[in-house]
Length: 291
Length: 236
Image (tube, rainbow over all chains, first blue to last red; front, side, top):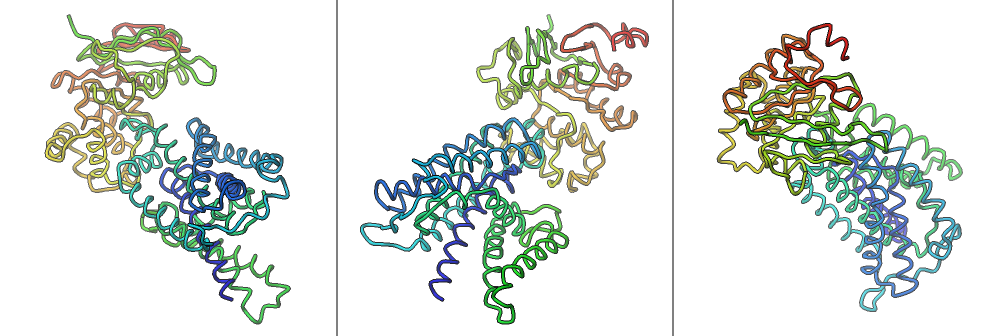
């Protein structure tokens, strides 16, 4: 039971990192990307390769994940500079689909469909460590960085872009630089999440980085409250814990748990969007979430 | 000789290989109100975007008060005294008018000690803003939003104001009430204004000179009086 809870907590922390970083571009910059799982995947493969080929140092794996995902965030930043709104959603969808194919085919780097297996357990200074405390520290640092960036000049610029890009341009804001930096920060964070994910499971394959995963992370952000600091964390806890919790309800036959999970999950999302469209942590009075 | 505020020479620009501006040259004199008209898609807004550093031209150059700015960016142009009021008002819907003004002053690097004076200057030109300064911009009418947008630009004490179709969605009387105090800044502050408009009648009433644009080129330049109804119909 303790192992189950620790595993769930680790997965929740990793997905909270994903949701918090996606929220940075969706909630603060208004860039609706449905390709966040791509950068999660890039970080996971980079972290896994570091552990497999060099040493299973989680800090080095996270650094590699952040650098690879953050560097390749330009793939997403370039369309974001040229198109907006639904056009960008379509562009990011295209990137997501292309990346899944590349992940499946680039066998020397990703292991192809079979993925990368036997990733060594993480060790720090020669001692094996659990991923849970590392994921919690990474999550705390990302939330802290988000809070600091959001309150500073950069955060104000992003929010200006989100609310009225033409007005932000008229204020002399460097739209291209702000969008590129926001994207790099968010994707590097997703890369860190990916590296921790690979080290935690000791196995990664393309199934974890599909469009479904991107949509799940987007749902965490929206349900928790876009543009809020704590909303993505709340969204990750609810979307990952609620279905697991249902498995322990005695009167639900074990064979039906999956179906009940889907019904509860769908119903909760529908009701939430009707009664709290700004998300659980969002500020209803403004019609848009705030921190 | 009257100094030149903006001098653009041989500007060409486009999107995705499609040329929208073709070798366009323009001169805006200091203290002049220059009106630019033309049908939709003629290239007027693109020209304003180029002049404010938001769109890079494929050819040509622009001088501001005789200088070629090293980095032709909106921030550099703002520092050189150019302000843009974008098409579609461009106000931040969730912010109050006071917050928008605060953001504009902060973006322009105006110290706190000088902010009150700047706001008072704008309220002197557009006194009606006082009535709704604590309201969120998203709850304001079109005319009020346009006032806020222009007020935001005036906070930077511009020497050159680029106005992109400020009359859109406004009743003629409302536009008249809005444009006249702005036009008066030419006399009181020597401000130059480049006004892109479709509301020809009201725009001509305050303009010194008119440019007519068609398919990315200027096809007429002259005084508003030279464009009677028949000539306008012919050019459009």
